[in-house]
Image 1: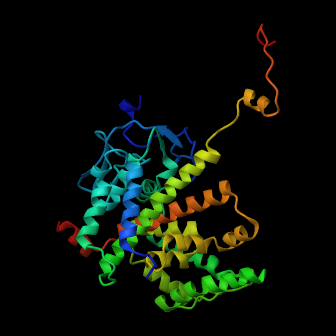
Image 2: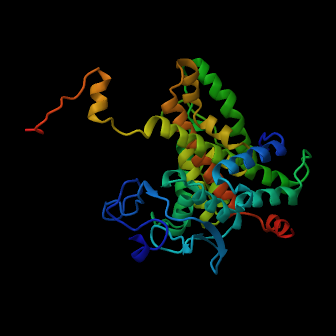
Image 3: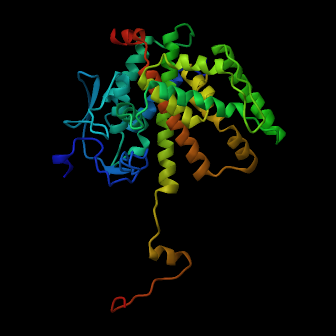
Length: 280
Length: 107
């Protein structure tokens, strides 16, 4: 059935909105791939085309939900995406294929934002950055926030030569315009693909500072996720853990953050690293 | 610089995750070969000298976190969220009842 009419990859069935995604202009979920599908291919391979690296499912070329040819600029990223497709067993679980989803977003740009809009959305998060919102009680949590978050905020302030601060008021910290300008011009140095990844990580962690810590390799994904969920971890330690909720959310957040971070790094790879790899 | 530990440990864990993901012919999978080639090319050791080494190690650790978290998330999903609804027979069985047998069918 799908063989004849549909190109490989996500079937373009506008009614099959089993998953979730951004609403189309008419309000319907026009950009929603189905949640699960049977695995319909035997072999996954990579090939190099004009626009970059492509993924082949058997002999068919993978396409994005908007039916564009799936091409990525980095070979390592293509390999990782191919691994995602190859590790699907009987059914294809799209919700576990975070790198593929990120590539699709970068290729299709369904929210139709340009570079300036993406950067603005990313920097806007600084006003509601998790690390800047402190509690006053319970004192144990306030102390924990001070001990765990202050070092990262200090690192960001030193690294980018800005003032950020923190606040216990409901309005949050007062971020100076110069700080925002600094981050805007720093993010402008990233290409469009990397920016999609950066904005994704910020949205997941609810923190620009933590995301920059990841991008700059100052902290690991596990640490960033822990810091993002600090209050939750505090409550878990106090009241106990519910595996089907806490661990579930933790694993999902780790997976998405790791995917986003890896995506950013692979999309902004320096040529010197590539050169070394090609020497073999 | 992020506290990553020994690169060899990261490499071994990453290769193990790739084995889980790939199946029988994991050694031929592009990811397995790429990771090994990358580590050999940079000859990642415990020395913290080369910046490219550190970048590679961080990337490897991030990819390891991704593979591990996806696997654990899927396992949790299967365990707690994948079962779907119980059938009427099962629901009756929960309180020790059995559904009545109606020889002529319903109604």
